[in-house]
Image (tube, rainbow, N blue to C red; front, side, top):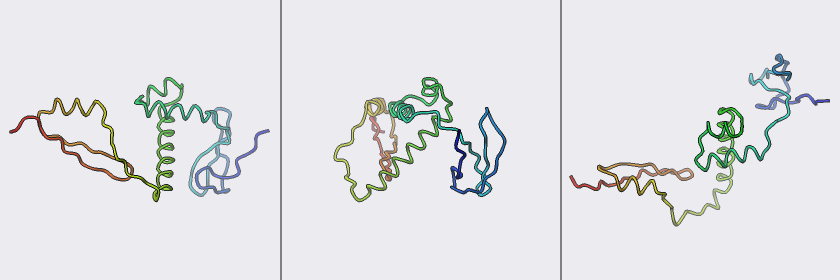
Length: 142
């Protein structure tokens, strides 16, 4: 027997009502915040979510990830957003323990841009809560 939801998944309120069924699953709507939710058990494992984030961090596109894992692109984006929020929370907890990097590695795209640069260009370096505007000088003097 399935256990019914006892709290709203967004605000935690117990003030909700039934809101129809979808695909055989009971839906509820919260009277406090208006969130709709179900009592369906999560069908995606932590390993599947971690693999999606691994693919994303290794430059796979959202559509490619959704095709590989047979899930919707919007679900992949939600997992990425939650992963970002989790990392941000971890960084904020370790705020006092932060160590500034001594070496920053630039990949081959920097070399390509620098080599083929005809005029002055700019780039934005974003690290943690800081951002720096980088100026790349032109190869040809005008």
